[in-house]
Length: 334
Ligand code: COA
Image (cartoon, rainbow, N blue to C red; front, side, top):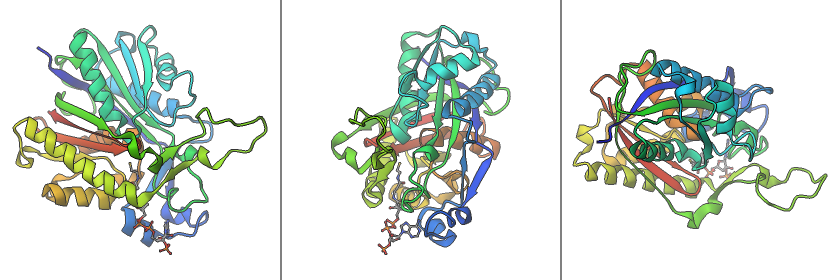
C-alpha cells in the first residue's frame, strides 16, 4: 500500500524586490499596464553572488527542518529547474553537497513551469518502488538571469525563488514549522505536447554552434509568443484539472483550495471561469513574485499555509503549465 506524503515544506525568496515602477527605468512600461494585463506588482531577484542552487539550498534546509528529517537520511534529491547554475553538474548535485545528503541519488528535471508537479509524479514513482526512500524535491529558478531587460513583453513577467518538499511513503509525524499536517499525495498526472515548443524557449545552454568570442546571442534569453502561450495555458490547465478530478470521482465542490501556476492573473481567472470555480477558492500570490516557474506551485503551498488557507482536512488541487508545452495537476489531502 503506497501512501505518499509531503512531510515538510520550505520556501526561499530573495530579499531584492523589483517593483513595476522600478522596471520603468529599464523599458517603456508602467504599473497600470503590467497590473491590468498580468496582476503582477513586484518580483524578487537573486543577489549578484547568489545562484539558483543557493536559493534551492535555503528552501531545502527549511523543508528538512519542517519534516524533522536529517539531510543524511535523504535518499534522492530532485531539482526541478529550467535555469540551472550549470548544464553539468546538476543543480540537484550542488544542493545535495551543500545540505550534506551525501550519497543520495541527485538529478535535475526540466519541465519548465510544470517542473514541481512533474517532480511530484517522479517522487511518487520512486517511493512506490522503494518505500523506505526519502525524497527531497526542490523547485528553484533564477529566471531573472535569462530575461532580456530590453524586451518589455517578457522582462515584466518573471522572478526568482525556490521552494522544497520532503516526501516519504507513509506519514512520519506532524510537520514542525510550515505545513499544518503532512498531506497525502492522492493523485498526480502530467503530460506534454512538443509540437509547439518554439512558442516558449530559453536557449543559450544548447549545443548551438557559438564560436569563442561570440557575443551572447538573442536566444540566450527567454523568448515567448505571449498570446499563443496564454491560450494554450488556459486550455491545458482547465483540461488537466477536470481529468484528474473526474478520475478520482470528485468535483470542484470537493476542493477547498485551488493553487494554479502563478503566471498571469488573467490566465488564472480564465481557468476559474472555465472550471466554474469561485475566486474565494483560488489562491493567488503572483502579485508579489511574478512567475517563478518551477518554484511557483510550492511557493503557493507555503504561502497558503502561512495565511491559514490550508488546514488539516483541506483538499488542495495543484495545476501547472509551462514551456514544452508541459502540464500537470495533483491532489493533496491534508
Ligand atoms: N508595457 C506596456 N506596453 C506593453 C508591454 C509592457 N510591458 N508589453 C507589451 N506592450 C504593448 C505591446 O507592444 C502592444 O502594443 P501595440 O498594440 O502598440 O502593438 C500592446 O501592449 C498589447 O500587447 P499584447 O502582446 O497584445 O498584450 P497582451 O494582452 O497579449 O499581454 C502578455 C501580453 C505577455 C502579458 C500576455 O500575452 C501573457 O501573459 N501571455 C502569457 C505569458 C505567460 O504567462 N507565459 C508563461 C507561461 S508558463
